[in-house]
Image 1: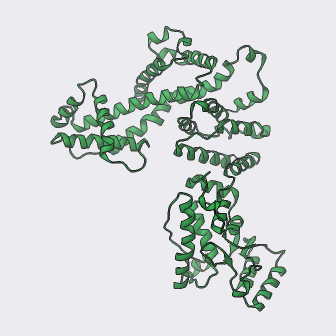
Image 2 (image 1 turned 120 degrees about the vertical axis):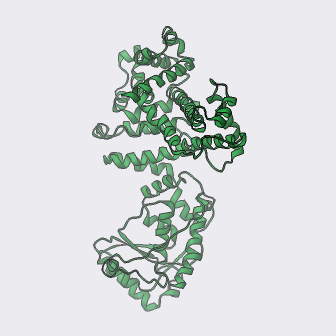
Image 3 (image 1 turned 30 degrees about the vertical axis):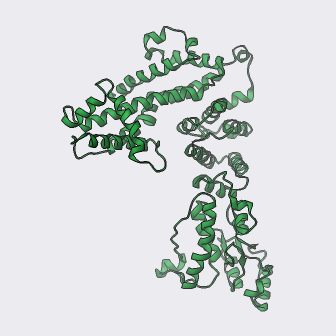
Length: 511
């Protein structure tokens, strides 16, 4: 536990610095619970530690920063130091000789992080004798342990956190690529933030390359997935992501590219989610992303270059791997798992005590709330919303859900009379409508995200292969026309395939 003086120092200085840093990164202020234990003492005596003085301030700050920014912290070092200013300067503490010797004799500790004795205020804390003894201890133990003198928290952060840890922390916490105002200011806090955020993209690609070259596939996949998930959450497509990744993968040694665990480097689901936020100028990059993350043959083909047959027919060889990803994304089982199942789960979680309403106001409240419930489970609601904001879309949605049964009027009558099940029937109809609309939206997204609208030859090749694979499931009036007719306008194919999926999905459910 901390004594009163140490507790006050943590609240006023350490948390003050942390609050400014996390707020500058857009994370806001955070709450912390500090637990201080000596693992050896705790295991034998079931007791904690009483902390007084200033020695623990630097390690407490580093531990809290690690927690706040989700940056992993290694256990191979010992840190000590007094944070002597509200900006994060460090001052020496007493007992450095004993701390250094204890660290040097511990086989698990490789580094000793401590305030630089060359700081101007060293003699304000240490007596001349203590300073001389500390310098002698440092010289005596220089070959026993790595010594890391630091002047402030920015230098301590550089010694404590790895580049990989800082990149993962920024991806997990969401401040990757952000530029803090503090980093542009003179001062220790600004330099500390600069250490955490500088060259984020260069760090990311350098670390990913290092893991791939080391054939550390698991860590490579974690890094790529976190990067993609961050941009999905931001609803943006990372510029040139596919081409940068493809260039990196192509340059890897053959043994790495042929590692059977490498592909898929990024889950198909994540690729599809990411592609939803691509602009028209990103279409070729999206195709590259699907190709280079899903199949090693895509990379081998790019390395080998086009064959004479490829040159005579430029697009079919490219459309085959793309077609596989395309059809996998459109497979009935995939759509059940990725699109329909979350909606069914949302419906199952929404239980009601009554199946009838007393008046129209209660009807509106019910359908608006349920519509919001579905949207929330689909991740379509962000920030603060209220019923008035949800009402227009919700009521229009009910109208569409009952378009084949008389529209809103029939829905209101059913909610009051419960001839078919009342509110349960209404919510079931809304659920089915949501599934139908989301299914068609998903199919349309797959088409548009994987096919460059300016590449007519690719669209024709893809449509021909698509018709060969799924043609029998399409209506006859669609099949009787040539694929070329749908290369520029495939809305009819999208709608027809989406409707045919319902039959295939119903068949799957009976198996």
